[in-house]
Image (cartoon, rainbow, N blue to C red; front, side, top):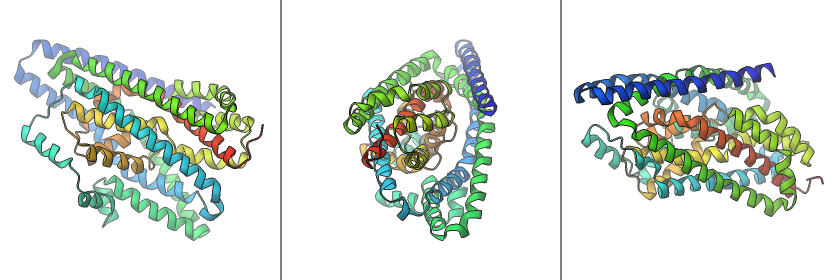
Length: 417
């Protein structure tokens, strides 16, 4: 409990530091915007963006080992897929369906409301902008090349996230097939994943630096119009969360009927804790306890809930399409429907590799933006508002996993009254 309290305290401190950095960046940027010459503003923006670059490169350096270690361990822990049987199949059916629905909601809303259009972050080089827009027209052959690795070392070195996912899936399945012989390696990778997760904590300490540089550069160049973007971004995202809750609870009602309201009462406290701490992991023990009290058998809770924490993050899934395309809109990068559907499928896969990571959604969005030639500096732009988005998406993740576990228990005919 002391460790959890310390972690929550550190997260709150980081949020305060980010808000302070946001304020300082806004003040400095506004002073420069109002008083400096255009040539000074241009050089100032370049210098401030170096701070953002430092933060982004630190995040990028941990993506590849994080995806590999966590995904392999997650697959290996499933054990013998034949013994998992019906429960695993039904759980994955819910997870995949809910993930696709969540991604599509984010995709539809961001295209309808266009929150990124409220700020104009034109790329400095017009020719480069045209080139980026051209490159986002993915063909089937280029997509295949991005998916299947010819060398895992090349994929790791270049952060080809999808190629790493494919290799990790094969590696994890092979480790599962070997069984106990692979157990020492799986345990080693699990320890590696914990070390890298600790690195994520350290890297996030540089977030205020990235926020300060990004906002100082943007406001020096664009003025205070960035706050119109923040207001639109958060407001439309909350609308999306509301729609997603209606769908999830509606489907839950079709399966659980009148017991849905009982479930919501049971998980009210975990939902509030998740909202306040922006941590699904912080409520895992309490959520497990409440689901068993609700009537879910221990064996289904023990299997489905941890699996859901890796494969069923509905709020985060919706946020990923919403954030990625909003950043593209902010940079005036047009993405046709085919490219956006490709991005959705990419997010469907890549998001499974780093679930449970602090601010995991941002790591996935960063990797996806790089893959689709969207400037990764946009991540630093949305970081000041991300904590508030994270509160809503974390609470939604907890709701989705509680409903999934209850639904699987009901389908198995083992949900106690």
